[in-house]
Length: 374
Image (tube, rainbow, N blue to C red):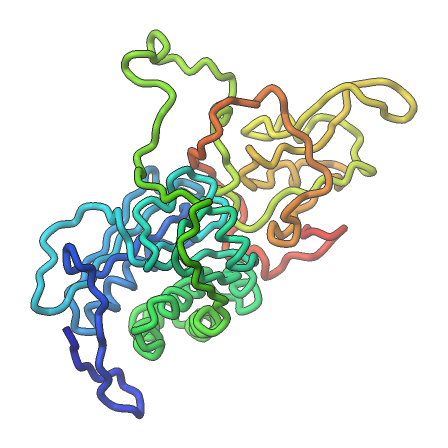
């Protein structure tokens, strides 16, 4: 259905053609994120944006404990004014799937439900070709946006950059409508941040790189989003006891990082072990080695598979052997060691909670030291 609205621009009235699904008549989006990146608010704004476009709209989020690092999903549905939205079940077959953190792509069956005419939007500095490889996308359009880098440059919130990228990916929504919505909602609540948020919104809209991919047989389409757990009622340990010593032994905590990770400088390390005692997830690997000509147990560096970026080790290190670095500048850290005590045969991503110490304003007064932030 074609609906005419006034978007407030000099062009006057503009038609909005909502590309609804053939089966249920809805245009659906799903945002995959972790707590602290603003996906919940972004989903609410997308729901309100649909209403501003005179469409029927619904938006809700699902998440566990309300803290940084915990998994968050936001579900948005739009429909034409003549069709009511009669259910609020999770979106399983989105027209647009959005990843607020590229590490979330490690989750198996993440792209399940995507058809070749769908769009995948990813917060990453990689190219669409690279994203297609590491997501195993069967077919469709890939839109990439370095939302974290843009947010740092604009001193904006990352969800504002992602909102601009989502509007660009949808293709039929005027960016002016999103700008007016941000002014009307966030501008009243956070007037000091309005200019920076609008910069982030426009930069996210303008700096998207995209590419369309035809279905490729080497990437099998994922049809089942339900997680296949290793234990069930028939084979769970007696009493439900977790036999692993660390709470993160079977988890990949990398999605919990909010743009920073501890960089290890071995030439400064005195192998005191303070980083290991303060680490909540047993990240550091200590093994036989040599220090000052003597054989001893030495620190071989962090296992970033389990590091959630809380940076407590950076705070406690007495000699500056650990500094905070931007994760996007160090995609393959030089000093990296697997902690054999935490290795597990369960490789499926299970995002786990993290109370990260880095906030959205931490970059404002940070200083660069040894290639990182201190």
